Amino acid sequence: MLVDASNALLTWYDAHKRDLPWRAVAEEIADPYRVWLSEIMLQQTMVAAVRPYFHRFTTLWPTVEDLAAADEAEVMKAWAGLGYYARARNLIACARAIVAQHGGRFPNSEAELLQLPGVGRYTAAAIAAIAFGRRAVVVDGNVERVVSRLFAVKEALPGAKNRIYDRTDAITPAHRSGDFAQAMMDLGATICVPKTPACGICPLHSFCAARAEGDPARYPIKAKKAERPTRIGHAYWLERGGEVLLVRRPAKGLLGNMLAFPSTEWTEAVPAGAAPARAPWEQAGSIDYVFTHFALTLHLHCAMTDDDGGDGIWWPVDMLEEAGLPTVFAKLIARGRAWRSDQRLGLRQDI
Ligand code: SF4
Image 1 (cartoon, rainbow, N blue to C red):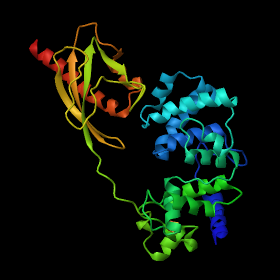
Image 2 (image 1 turned 180 degrees about the vertical axis):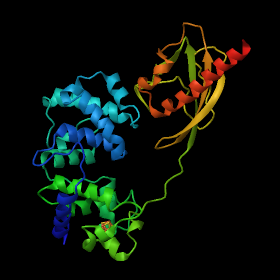
Image 3 (image 1 turned 90 degrees about the vertical axis):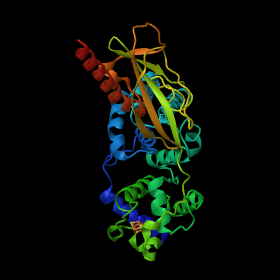
Image 4 (image 1 turned 90 degrees about the horizontal axis):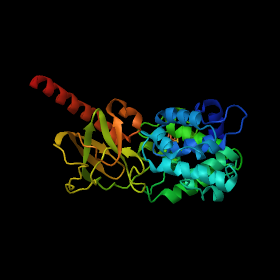
């Protein structure tokens, strides 16, 4: 049954696989650099969002050596907007490790891949299987959903992860395990979707326990999530002569090394102010943003100054889109600009 199921899936994949820019075409072997880059970008991120970033990165840095030699700030800037910025820092560290320790060639075993920065069990297995044709058990969110339905796994996630891994191992073929992994991902993305699985056209239809039970969408069963706490922060728009003050965030921690507006800590209690200069600060609204582990309300305070002070980088207001600010800070740009146009309007009225 298990062999029949994996054969049925591979036959379906040969006819219906998605056309993705990081995949090998025709008989070519997938390029490990492109497989690795795409897998890092796809963590917690939809394919449609990744496509333009993948194109940008492979245009700017076509090989792992190019990426290893890149300026870190340029890489962070190119990543801006994709979120989960630790991935970008690990990307650079990993590219440099591959050049320094492996002569610019990706290792092909899961054990060696796992030693690289930012490469966990899933990514190591995906690269080993897809780029090197090794038999490896590849379990991402899509695979987790398909397998939990195929076997009607009653245990709730995340506790069920090991059981789902073992089940995936049982159906992973010795040959074409990279294609098999990609077939499972494609099936999860296009047919065995979260809310309305299209069982009628599924190649695993006759093997699927959840479909036989009659309510496949109840799988995977998930443990109730803890509520996401809300944090509060203040950010500062300090403007001087058409430029606004940006600072580079500390290397360690959330959004590390990214350019941003100066801001306070983000805490559940109201944080103490941390304005970058003495100035006639005015409130200019707030934005809401949701991180994985907390929701943030960020209040913006704006002021004009003539002082030369302020540690950081003075950046032209009209070119802020090019600063590569992370999304949470990029959302403040419109508020800051609205505030400054109100200021100008006020000045004109005074005249
Ligand atoms: S039969 Fe339905 S539930 Fe089962 S794997 Fe296919 S789409 Fe998913």
